Length: 139
Image (cartoon, rainbow, N blue to C red):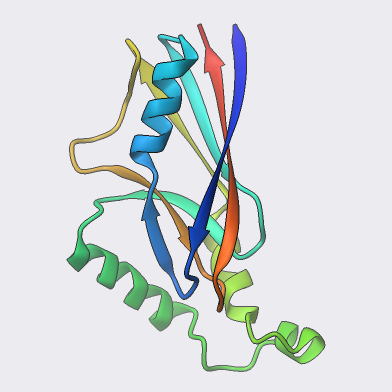
């Protein structure tokens, strides 16, 4: 088994900004020389998450609206009282989404569904530079 670790930096806009990184992960897999195994995608930070989704405008809007219904921005958060930065909701959303995702790959291809893309979601209330760690375990 071989472990290969790569990093990406992505500029985000905050406010539930969804970015498709499928091609980035695919490019890193292609350059890894590995054929079969798993890849973990991890976003460093406590106000962003990783998932898969069908990356199309309608579903992206539905996804954003679902977060607003379930973890709204406009209610009081204890975090905001302590730190005054107004992003308590983004921490809660990110913890519910999760910071990582593991995807198998076989025959040098990610094993994703036809309409399944890998995305990062920036829940914070401002733009950020996000570090994404991509780690391959395979042969």
